[in-house]
Length: 371
Image (cartoon, rainbow, N blue to C red; front, side, top):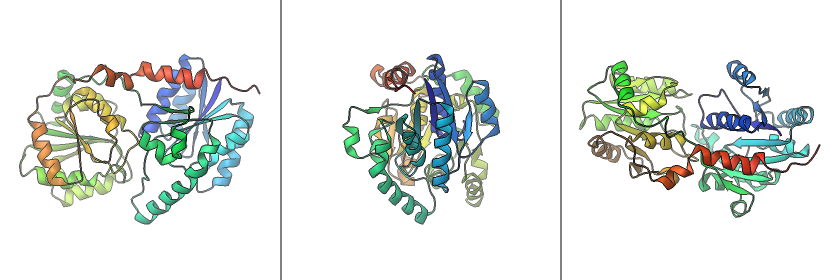
């Protein structure tokens, strides 16, 4: 089998990127070849994929939908692909799926989000309207449908799709061993940052409208009145990073905020932290919240996030209110740090073995039409 998958960016910053690289790993174990589509070509990623035997195809972005449609048709036709696996966040991202369908190969549509990541209100309204329109016909390009949560599924597909035998809920997999709490890693990170005796609040993710990062500064300002030893440690990058840095300075919080950029040791940060924070405006199903719970760190997340990400009792869903978050943080800081207590049935949902089995049954063992 030869699969064309989209859409990937740089392989580092987005949850979809991480998911697709994991998919590639499982595909290779099954002797399946996977190439990728991108509208933001990254040389480093292309080199990494080439070393794994995969190709990265550059295509026009959605500002040129017809050009994207034609380009993908050509790639599918000349590449001899059996299946197109479209991992998307908005129904507007449909030209490639219809191009693949037009070329006679099967298509899987996978929804990873439940909202529009645009800071500009007008742009957000327009994209939301287009999503409502496009979701009425996007599903016609698909043969099978995946989603990380029911909320994400309803964002991208009509409700009838969810009741179809062709729909599958696929939880993003987590390595529970990798993210297990480590006292050694905890001490090392806190020593590196010079915060051995501080209360470490942790955010891991993109700096963008979706993640609602600026709320963290409002909340921190309130919290410091009760917890003067608190510091906010953030790992990640994104379009709002520099504005976030400037806002922290304006609010007199620069010495309380640590901006680490992209880190390859997120599991160590989870062990080092005292409370994990995720105030997102929307999510499909945030893998980072699952990883955090795996480490045993108390988690405070937005009440707009699906409850499906709750693996344990160590997570609380809160409305966007700085005083409430500060109060909940105070209680969480009083809890001892240590190993996570996650029921076996919850672990199984996010277990890599379970995901591999879903891929094998729903993708790699799918009887495909002969060319």
